[in-house]
Amino acid sequence: MPDDWNDSSSLYDGYGLSILRSGAGDNKRAFWTIYGRPRGHTQDDIMSYGLQAHEGVFLEHMGYPRNWGYWEHSWTSHFGARQFPYERMSATAQYCADAGIAQVTQTRAEKLDDQSGSNKVINIDPDHWQRRTLALIDIDPERFYCVDFYRISGGDEHWWPFHCQEGEFSTSGIDLTAQQGGTLAGPDVPYGDETWLAANGCTKGGYGWSGVKFAFAHLYNVEKGVPSGPYSADWKLKTGDGLGLRLTTIAPEQSELNVCDGTSPAGGNPYEMKWLMLHRTGEAPLRTQLVSIIEPYDREAAVTKVTPIAVTGNDEAGFAAQGVVVEAGERTDTVLCATDATTTRTTENGLRFAGSFGLWAEKDGVPVAVSLIGGTELTRGGLGITLQSPEYRGRIVAVDHNAAGITISPSPPAPQAMVGNSIFIANTVRRVAYKVLAAEEVDGGVKLTLNMDPLVATGQVSGADAHVVKSQTPFQLQGYRYYHGARVHTADDKAQYQILECRSGTGAIIDPALHPEASAEKLAAEFPEGSWFKVYDYGVGDEVVWPYTVSVRLVREGVYEVIAPVDVTITLPDGSTRR
Image 1: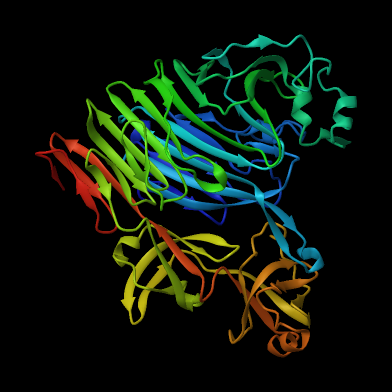
Image 2: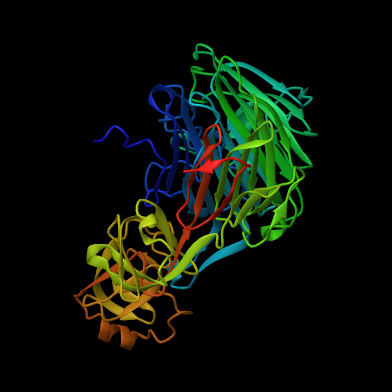
């Protein structure tokens, strides 16, 4: 295994794991997010994250359960927000990219109403979703900070949890008032109160109480405050030998911060940590947007000031585009986030931005690093980055499933630049990521060799109904949207259909809206009883998306390094050169 195998960011879409990495040697760091739905021994951690740095772990879930109770499983022991009424969700990656001093990933989750067990449909609620953009941004070889842009839509109540390790804890920028007794469930609700748990949807089983509101009656010593601007929480780690972590949050209006203590309800008090539970209520579908800066530090934090910055123009679902200014020593960073790359936006400090993510870092008014992902412009005063398109979009025109190959058209501007990068294959309901291993120009387009076998299921045919290829083969990943939008093929590949799901005891369920012609008689002729069908991740006609990532970095006085996958226009300060 080469020494640099874990130096760069990586996306493991089959697992639903995106890892941002930077640094070298003892200063390696990783900021990761989990967006998948694994099977068995799961925790309620979709859209959560973790952070490793300074040769240790700063942020993580509670680890292996002490007694198989619900405390470790609960979403409150992770770092992902939840909407109430509580809904089941599935998620996909939108991108994962190294962009100079910024490593960035974005994931999106949506409510899943799975009716495929009755061979009907899988409904996606357009009002109930989350989008999270995470960035790891280097300050210097030893220091860095992370940014969390978080959007939450749906329900009428939102909760966002955060916790760190034991240690000296303090807050700034917010006035807290101690609640007189009780727990987060209320001043009159004692610790672990079974009456309250039962009345709030929790149930008692062989391992004790469980339920999505379980932790509310197990978080105590509650203090409350209403944010009026950015506020910070600081943990000086008990066992960190000078290590600490500071969280600075720009919370939405009409929200309430709850600061609590928490320990394992299994007994023994193995730890006592501070929990932050940010809470907001409103008319459904409630929409909440917040920005957080997370900085692990050794003895002294580098970030000295965090300020929200207005960005013009509405974004998806009426959300405003987001921006934050981070000051760290001599450097001032403006970090921007949006989803509509077709809109050119401006900021209070004179930036023009059209893209998904942007970073403008400067010292004494001179840019030292500029990063743009999925965009066409990030400039100020005529300096910066412009390009014609935010991403490549094409279609699959041919597949070679056995060789993990696809042919795409039209040809991308620079096919070889795709090698080593992740592309996204999508249709109306499905989005999967693959890494490109090779690119070859062929008649009609470009043939890509991908890093994984696209075969995701196979089953033996036991009959046919309208829109169902029947099978008694078990499908272990049913119910996770793992098969939603994939393609079922006959054994000879002469017929294929887009499916809703594969279900144990049922078989492959074909999307009736896309394939009204898939009658029982037609399917019985195409899929003979006893033959085997195959299910592939993608097929001809699916769209291929490759977001462009451009970075500009000052490597020495007057010399900038430019990394771009396609032709871009880079305008530098007078007297500067590029390499």
